[in-house]
Image (cartoon, rainbow, N blue to C red; front, side, top):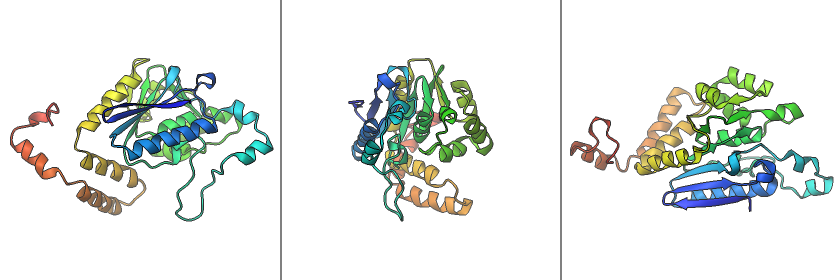
Amino acid sequence: MSVSIEKSDDIWTIIHDRPEARNAMDPESADALVAAFEEFDKSAAKVGVLWGAGGTFCAGFDLKYAATATPANRAERPDLSFPLGSAAPPRGPLGPTRMELSKPVIGAIEGPAVAGGMELAMWCDIRVMAEDAYMGVYCRRWGIPLMDGGTVRLPRLIGQGKALEITLTGRKVSAEECYAIGLCEKVEPTGTTRQAAEVMAREIARFPQDAMLADRRTIIEGQGLSVRDALKLEWANGSHGNKNSAAGAARFASGVGRHGDFTKI
């Protein structure tokens, strides 16, 4: 199996391991990733980490597999088209890229995250990249469009102009540039991104979850709303996530957490 899960208390690390294809995705791997994240979302785990084994995050969809497809086996593939109305969509070509999880996922990126692999990275809430990791719309060379949310998420992360330049040229985007333009949130020494992502995940898991998840929902769901509608959404989500605020305020009043101290919460 190309996908496995390592569980450590509140943190689940979902591992994609397909070394013969530089962790490029085929339908079996895509289905396995979806199943792993469905299990994660239903579990008591608080934060997930997505990591590609062997020094490669994901080289996109497996073009060698695609090149050998025949009309017969194409017909056997699941239909990934969006249904009419509000029915839940099928998985994306790269697996979980259409899933809307209730909990955060941190992408730990070593080596290439290119083409669909870049789209998979952008699906994560937060990205931690190795110093020599890189992204890029490498599928530009082969006439393959982005179909796993890349054209939706990239401009939301870095703005329309830069998103167009990166998408239309297909060029390599280094970890340093990704950090500078907001395409990743941390850059770490090569070989340490999984550890760094898991450390961050444990920090997030320490906090009262209702309030943290309410703020996450508002940031994600508020994209594109007017200021007034976004403020209404924030109030609604915040009211739902306000269950532990009185207890938290009482702990602060007792002297815990003064001067920005995060050690005892």
